[in-house]
Image (cartoon, rainbow, N blue to C red; front, side):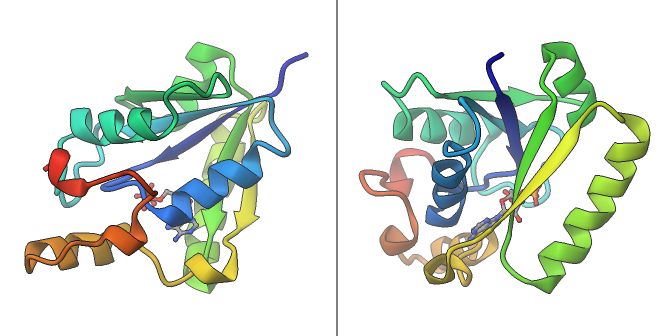
Length: 156
Ligand code: ADP
């Protein structure tokens, strides 16, 4: 049976770190659905539509990566689609604590769903969407932190 994982997040914006998690995830899963959570409008540099478009542009032509946005709880979205794995990335102990808390809640509410946490490669541990938002807000171009061929100006 085909193994499919949902990689959920805010992705505001999607970074080189996120891309590394997708790449590693594809060694485990046949397909990855990158899911932009539409109700976690935490900071809002990019609209949900543009976050989705940016990720779609990175993986255009790759049949193993699908990009979606969804509202509501991640576990409910997985259930609707029959997805049984949630993929997440972990940079440090702060991520670990947060991810563990999410995993424990999801395990209780959706016992059929397994969370898979992957370590971030060392060259990407310092990259965060919030850092990119900060750079952009001061007029800097975060080109080195973004997947190649992505110009954030096309999505602002
Ligand atoms: P959320 O708001 O749901 O945490 P994010 O878009 O910030 O969404 O992150 C989505 C996932 O990607 C999380 O599991 C997060 O830990 C992970 N992540 C964030 N930045 C990086 C990075 N630089 N390298 C690897 N994983 C990362």
